[in-house]
Structure formats: structure tokens, C-alpha cells
Amino acid sequence: MSKRQEAFKSDFMDNISIKTKEMLHQSGWNPDTSIDITPTVKFLEAMGYEVFDAVLETLSLFGGREVKFAHPDGSWEAFHFSPEETVGDYYEKEDFAEFEERVKEPLIVVGEAYRGHFILLISKSGKVFGKNGASLYKFGDSIYEALETLCLFRKPEEVP
Image (cartoon, rainbow, N blue to C red):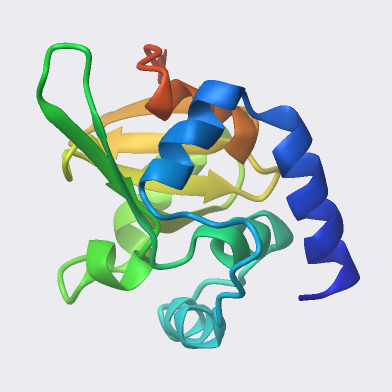
């Protein structure tokens, strides 16, 4: 792990709630696990993405990871950070151009949330969005805020 990734991990651990950390740990996540994101980065680059730091940092901590946890209503909720699984052979980079125009910066697909109903995207500035059909929602200004939104069942903000 690079010094930049180590700094991100340290900052990350300082910026998420104990409840969110517990939920991540219960799903088997360990901040000390090293994840080889090379195949994922190559996959995204082959799609035409220029992979920026916010995506590299997120995938270095969560790449390939699925997080499952109980919703307060008793059902199970899940999200994952696997662009290959999300995109499959169905989506192309161009399918997300409309959303880039709405947020006025590049977006990269990083996973899915709400049992596959939302495609998770990270912007160049590090904001995390979820796409559902033609609707776009902001989950947070950073991966920290997005995980809090997902794990603590906060309502994401709709983007016009």
C-alpha cells in the first residue's frame, strides 16, 4: 500500500462512526487487508475511464467487497464495490455521460447499493452518487459520508 493509501486509510478510520465501522467489520471487512486492484483498474481503463485518486483510494479499501447488514425493518441490505460485477457486459462509459453533465465532473462506476437498485459512482472530487434509472442521488461529499448514508440508513439527496 502506498503512503497516500495509508494516509487515506488512517483518515478514513478517523472519519466514520463506530456504528458504521461495526457494520463493516461484521461483513468481514478489515482495514489492514491488502487488495490488489490492478485488474479492476485495467477493466475501468479498458472501458475508457481515466481512473482518479478518489476511486483508487476507495477500491484499495473496499474493492470486491460486499457489505451485508440488517435493515431496521428486519430485511437485509447490501452494497458492493465491484465495478466489473456492476457493469458486466451491459453498460458502457457513455451510458453515464448524462449524469456527468448533471454533476459537472467525471464519474466512474464503482459498485451497487440497495440490493442492486442503485449504481454507485464516484466523481473526480470524491463525491459519491447513486443512479437509479434516470434519477441521481448524492450519497455524500466523500466515501466517508457515503458509507454513513448507506450503513446508517440516511436518505441520499436527489440531484436535479
